[in-house]
Image 1 (cartoon, protein in one colour):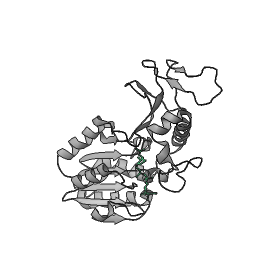
Image 2 (cartoon, rainbow, N blue to C red):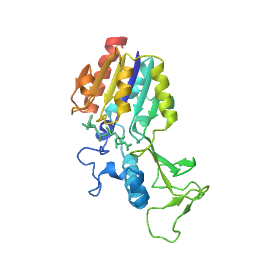
Image 3 (cartoon, rainbow, N blue to C red):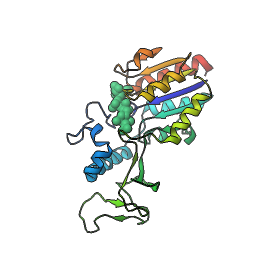
Image 4 (cartoon, helix red, strand yellow):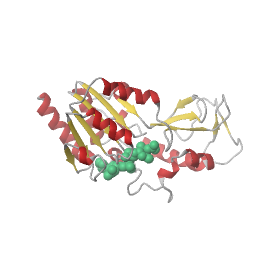
Length: 259
Ligand code: OAD
């Protein structure tokens, strides 16, 4: 069975991570879709880093939910599998089924990784699960060494510009290597099953990939609300992902693979 799963913020909602456009998405009365922009970072990097620092902390404290674990099960049992997530958290990567996690080549984080801190200009980057940004072995220096700011601003050691979170912001290009991985998977042939869960599908590429992958196959949408993709779905499941996905995935594996 060849499978593509596309996920968005709704899949992590039941782990306590607020979605972008839903209730609880606002942070200090600010709209996340306006915070996650190059313009806001240029104007007020401290504000943007504070938001990401809080999100990092929240994600570190959160646990994968039944939806993440069910997707890990599907990844193990489907013959061919790719997960494309718009989520920058690591909950898919931490999810397990019978002690096994998805492998790195089964996951594409198309909007980046919140735990990466990278230079605003060059390709210098590092990973870390602590506050923002977290200097590796003191190689980076704070902007204001005597500052009491608890946000530790850092500059790139190579080009001296501000470090930023390794995520894709509104109006920015997607990481081409990751796009290429999705394209390569789609070029290898259509999928028997495409599951789109927990996303408003506001971006054209999400709809495009779902439709291309599912041509002739099943397109299942899991979302309590209608989205632009709903009218193309062969099956609509209007339930929270953590309830619907374990059941749907169990049914799919039983029907198609006799598992
Ligand atoms: P949104 O916040 O736009 O949408 C979350 C979706 O999840 C909505 O369609 C909800 O109906 C649905 N939802 C909420 N709770 C759910 C649950 N328990 N189970 C299933 N679905 C649920 O998040 P995304 O669509 O992921 O991009 O947003 C896409 C991108 O826009 C994000 O990656 C981010 C954002 O701005 C960038 O930052 C570039």
